[in-house]
Length: 453
Image (cartoon, rainbow, N blue to C red):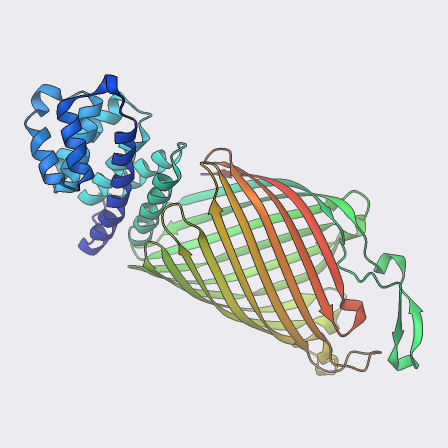
């Protein structure tokens, strides 16, 4: 048994109280005339008025006669827990789940009771079982918040392994992110007009994608964890095979948790292949500090340094530094999740004479997610980045400047706790003072995601 510090128990109980309010409301709504019971009706009324002590006193005297009745035991467990009689609550709620294993509201309340008793592992298991059911949005959101608090202050013991696979199909209007200009003038050659080769112009295609990955954690102490992750993603066009891609990334590091504060430092590797040939490798270091202000608000500061190597194009090799901060907030149990981040980035070339391959820039990302039903959510995101390149662009006699906008919107359907289907449309547009880098792109994609735990 893992005992939680008093402050953590209090946080869990405050979140658990919200879960209780949803559960009692549903209990009241689901009661029909044929199931009327004066004792239970009185207890429900007291719980609705937040008079847990009164409800407990009313029910406790009848326990000897009514123990084993799932409706009675459920209300007794909720009342006992909110009145501070944790052991009595556990006994009552355990009777409910023994008789009704599919009663996920009772499991959620039993998890809350275990949490109040300081048994984080038992609480986590009951919350996990409750979360696997098709619960109303408010209850599901409350359970997620409680799990988040438990995992922050009482990480699971033993190795943890999570994985996923993903398959998708898309229409991409510009698979090579290229300009649609058929001809352009080059100042360095006196403004002579050049024709753009067909393979260097915008090309559209139908694209299939597949991905898979794994995340692993191993507790070294109550505060420290060894973490690792690996992901592999590939795309294949129906016609444009020279733009087929494979991306691999791996992370290994340490995460430290202290109350609502969390810090991460990790080594990273990213490798990309395009058209069957290795294109770029990046190795570096990432760090993040994250703070949970309350059950609904989170902030983070993050940084990343990497050395990027372009195979066969040594002049493009750069050292990349990115620094940023992020915020996220959930508005109410059924309200929207809003998130955003701002960052600055700098890529410095390792050869001074090709400074135009390096740049410095800044970006902003904003997103919102809103639950539309028990299993359906709406998603929307906007990202903007501005880049100023070093040196003068060869042949064009200007220092390159880019502005990029990305807008996306879609729907996510959670078929069950492990399957998700996402349909999304994305519009990308890059404006540049160098015509070769000015383009637009539309992608319409549907993806099926299966997670494993």
